[in-house]
Length: 131
Ligand SMILES: [Zn+2]
Ligand SMILES: [Zn+2]
Image 1: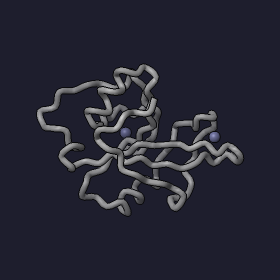
Image 2: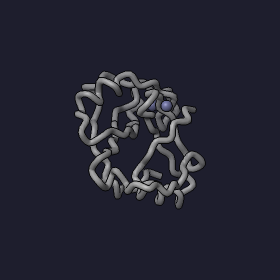
Image 3: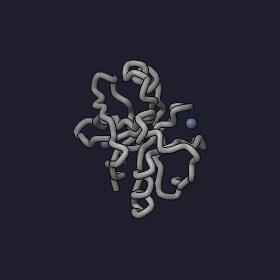
Image 4: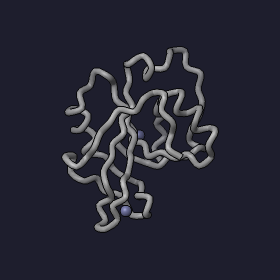
């Protein structure tokens, strides 16, 4: 797994530490590899700067698409961070080169469909991590 430390909204992590089954598919903003992160990968860090997600400087995006295996139909959700002043069009250009090391909930190896099939939303910095 890529070792780059990705900063996530503080609230999301404090929820995560309460649930040992929390997992999240997260795209590394540096190398573009997507791995599943579990509870043991999360770490609470006391930063000197305030939460950039609450300051509207960073955005956590949720990218949804369905598993490419026919008749599976399960939705996959990949989290990705971006700076507030970077456009979605630019991010899509970067994200379309993701390397996926994750499966859908049905156990199939996930592949990214063409970006026109992606559904992208912004995750509130106060959101809960999906268990
Ligand atoms: Zn990385
Ligand atoms: Zn599947």
